[in-house]
Figure (spheres, rainbow, N blue to C red):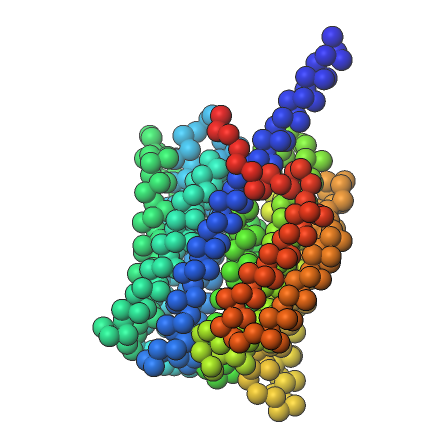
Length: 507
């Protein structure tokens, strides 16, 4: 009898874990498609911003400096709900109407984001270090509240494993809106065209996220604001909020420092390189919304082995995909940057380091997805140490390059190298922390990645050496990706890995 119960429990556990892997695969597969849509939409924006006579590197640099402050502020104002919401919904499931749980976090975030927007309207200097801005540029602060709300709405939808709205909001509506509006503003409001385009894209993305959110959760029932509970919620969410903010800030502190130490044109070139390099970064965010709920459910059941397997599984998927895309965009890097404009080719070195940084960051990202629930404060300490290390390396590297007489684009490459080293440090420390807690090894690496990279490098070399630039991009990039992923599929992917590309039947 006992053996039958144990066997049944083991079978149920195995089925549950297979369902979790299938959910992770479905979420990643949906967002992987979104990645290519985002790539198709982001290139027109960079092309318009880089080549249009009214914009160019200097205007793009000023825009990037303001963007850093706005998006960092928005991340802080989410109060950790981007990842903390999954745990709160899981803990209160069946006890409190989910719309009520979400409303508590939304009210706090809305108040914080409106206060921040008001502050930066009256004190715009942090957004524009060079002091060059128009009155319309100051209106970029309008984007802070909807940007904050969008993160919460998408996190709530992801808890129900609905990731399609994220693709629509982040990969289709937002990038295409900013590209179309930036092009239209060349004739309508050229002095502030990028700012107007950004505001419009954020509002469009927010509406796209809110509609499915409202359909899924509806309105709160019997709810009223309880500010004492909200204050407790804000304090309890602080470690996650800070971890989210620091993780995001590691991708922006380099631009922030460059904004003070380098000309706007160099910041613009670096921002363009970062926009290209951030495309593979979106792959890791593809899994974050689904990984959070899966981890919280297994934590409630103390199934640590399942968490370790899921983290390693997703970590490998992310590492494999990012490495392939890094090779495809990095080897013909001069041609990729040349698409934005001739003045941007000098940012190729920065692009290569930024792409490498995203590959080494994969282990830290998936480890942190669990650490924010099981070791909040220790994870926060490591995150703070990471960004402090990055800031020191970035500042020191830029100053050394200046002293040696290297131009601002070499300084930008140094900032990218500092990011790569800091994220490598975070990956080593956070994976060790999670392995110690779970009692299971955490490792995303497989040697098949090296074998897959070899033919990709050969294909890239042949394309850059023997093809004209247009053919290098048109044929070289697909050849690099094709050879890489063929070897990965044949040599590295097992049955669990292949679920990423297999459609599961709906129950």
